[in-house]
Image (cartoon, rainbow, N blue to C red; front, side, top):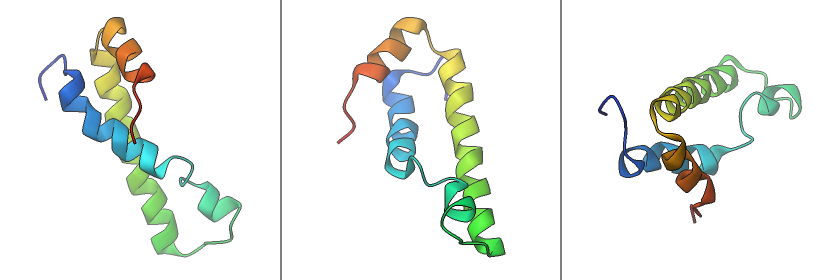
Length: 73
């Protein structure tokens, strides 16, 4: 990804985030999935979220607005 990612470059990260939205630590804290593997799964998803957030920071507000208005189905 370049210094200022394009919507096309970031769209796979956004789609992946939307597909797992809500699956982070709630699976441990609310659903009783308390194994090390469950927590590792959450940690891996969190790292992906950080990557997405860092990419969003590099984008223009216009690009972010376009992303926020898109449908990801």
